[in-house]
Amino acid sequence: MSFEERRVAAIDCGTNSVRLLVNSVFTDSELGTATRQLAREMRIVRLGQGVDRTGRLDPAAIERTRLALEEYRRVINYHEVDTVRMVATSATRDAGNRADFVAMVQSTLGIEPEVVTGVEEAQLSFNGAVDGLDSLVGAVLVTDIGGGSTELVRGLDPGNTGSGALAAFSMDVGAVRLTERHLRDDPPTPGQLSAAASDVAAALEVAGQSVDLAAEATLVGVAGTVTTLAAMALHLPAYDSAAIHGSTLTRDQVATLTRWLSEATHDERAAVPVIHPGRVDVITAGALILGAVMGAAGAAQIIVSEHDILDGIAASL
Image 1 (tube, rainbow, N blue to C red):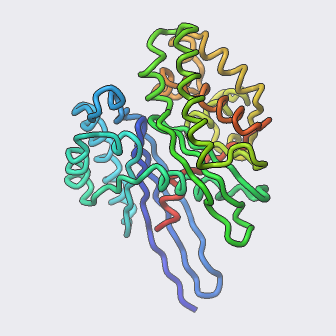
Image 2 (cartoon, rainbow, N blue to C red):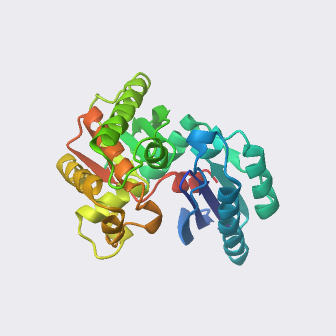
Image 3 (tube, rainbow, N blue to C red):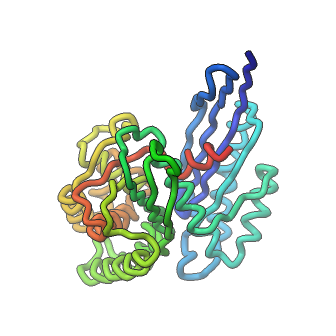
């Protein structure tokens, strides 16, 4: 009998946040493979601040990200990690000066970040999202609402032969991007909300040409917008991953929460304990996107997964 332990670290650098997952992977020749989570961290750095308008990463945003990665480097060293994979998504894809970002990551972590395509991002999100949701049967439609983009990916549950992503599309609408484009007042005006809704509807129409949104499937949602709305719907006094993972959000609940968020002031949203301070100004746009996706998919409810692209990156190692 042989036994091996490897430690892997996954880093997901999006438009709004940068996150770290460290796993210990045990491989036994007789018992197979098991994974234990050693660390999971998140920092809101807003790397994509202004990218939709300028096409460039702001030096201050790169510096905020560097400071977060410095912290992560210490965590990685502490856990004596063998392999690190860092994936950068929407904001970095769109930035004309992404070479500055790549150079910063190389000097901070000693590795080069992978700037993945929207389809690659969607596939990683799908792989992470279905992990641990044993109740899934048949076709699955995963939506990952990020800061700069929203991924839609259709596939089969892990129990199916040939399971995995079958079709994927990345829409250039996310919570940060939509807020910066349209929701400039606090609370936003009806005209601004209407413009944002039109933007999402147009993106979904294009997405539908690549991913069949209308076909029957179980809708699964991942990332901060969906998990935050689930925590609000559950009336949690504090964020609780265990309570959120596998819970459901109905379309009516999403509509009610979106209406409240769009009418609330910044201070009223900030007073909700489960809304992270870094999401207070963009959660309304995220809720708008989720409601539109559910409408396009004809979904009465969505299953919430705490596992997402970060878990997909770790699994790839």
